[in-house]
Image (cartoon, rainbow over the protein chains, first blue to last red):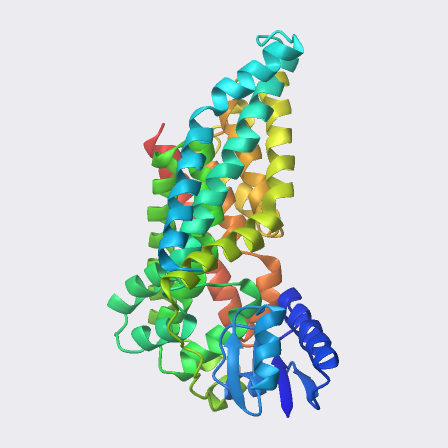
Length: 77
Length: 338
């Protein structure tokens, strides 16, 4: 699966990126994590509040850092 | 958690909040008596200010940030954009300024928000009304104003802040500067976002708590530092000393206050208690309000971010229009309250 963390470099964007990386390592799921900082690409997902998390092209959450539990649930679903 | 349990906890927490809030004056007074310090001395006056004001302001901040956090769970930038794209300028400016209070906003996402609004057909001036109101009329500023100066000043700030946002955005719209938006912005193909999921009431109550942890967790050191400095001024600087050079007779204090406010952003929370102490010693209210608006609405970091989407002339116009609005508010108050 492809996980994309959208964010232009705010503190919360870094937090989300780290949380996702940690979650992937812990769960052992095969996933590629990319950090997207290009504003044009972010806008293609229609996201207006960063950070946001995208899984295989689908926006899961925008504007907040979800809890590790939430992230873990998305990895297996 | 079940809905009834959550509501019960909320009522209990609110009850405890009011009980503690009402007994703050008694508790801080008793603490000073126990220490054996004369309450009329410089040290006593400063200490009482600190022991009473710090918990009072922090408690108000928690309550208001919680309430706004719950309110905001009903709004999202996507929903706001959908509403705003349906209205023409004028009505749109008023709605944008009002929605600016209720929509979750962080100046770090000012750029995606700006692009998202414009590409969805929200007029430029309406977008600016939102961008002016969202950071300026925020719950932290309102909570602190209410705590330090009472509801009248908080209300004045709310009304004049909204006015600056509405008139400022409308003016920028009338200047027809659409060609001064960076060219790449309008070429963006903005997708629809599918994250608008309905939250349950329990989740909304939780959202308020998350907001408290996020916001109060971030600003509390500034509040303590600001009130601490205020406590020193309260006890040691003679009343009226500042009236001579920060009073309402000196017209130039308003532009000076605006200039000083621009490079400050993160310190907004800590600045308000300082301003409170300055006011008490004779600085003018209009000057103080202008200072706070400048700190929150005209921030240098936000300008750097917005430069990505605005050509220099539009960026300068944005800052100029907002600065003029703030100056007028400052002068108006100094004049009215003279």
